[in-house]
Length: 368
Image (cartoon, rainbow, N blue to C red; front, top):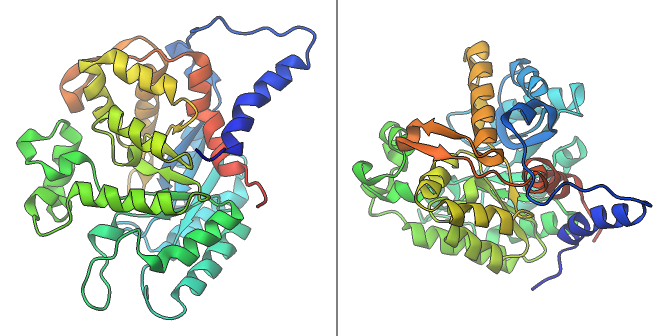
């Protein structure tokens, strides 16, 4: 297993700091936060989308003590990549302590001479302006095709110059590959209401209806091959690396790829579905992989949306997730039509998942 200096520093730094003191007060093992602690704890939401120059998102983030990582993405339902970048540049300059962003790139011209050089130049320019990571989306593997009409997968050699450049510069790759496992099931067999609603509204992405498209297993294998082939590339598996349906599978991914972490964006219901059935297994997973998990939501503010309604929704999502991860309180979760008891993760674990892990992954860029 490759030694990872980021995680080593994350583990040893608190111990060294403690050893330097004549006395060191520590929390009792297993001590947890309460719901009332929510606003007092510093937090990072490592997966949001601020797609409009409206202060509502940052206002709510400030009220709830969040920093945010806004992720630009090549998604046709969002503003153009250039428009997303313009918003990101505005807030990165106006509020660099609270707002951070990840850039992305277009697949236009992929496979043609000069594509990789142009893409690297664009990424380098964005990093100079403050971008902390680069996002690739599910269009790779599910939408984009080469000149012969063949689907382009994330392990295509055409990406090698870009991923090598990211590895050399220490810039993480946020990878959204595939979809939730529910995507390959009929609607009445999906485990969460939010997946049923999404794939009902987006049948073009409901792979159960498209047997001619790649299987879930094929997409995961392609992603895993890319991660394995780039051991010096820091990979952030968006949406629990599309392994949200089974924490055992997520554990296998993390064990196999020491250069990867995962984040939780838009997959809390699938986690809760599992914990209702085996609370201990899910809690043990979070404790065991406490250095490899980042908090995220996928909260999105697009042009034309009611900003004040959004603020209420964002606060509700952030508060509900805190209740589930940090406390032992039980809450009704409509997406799984069940009551879910909180995981009551220790404060030390919560502090990593909500803050320290994201700081390490996105703000630590060791020279290579």
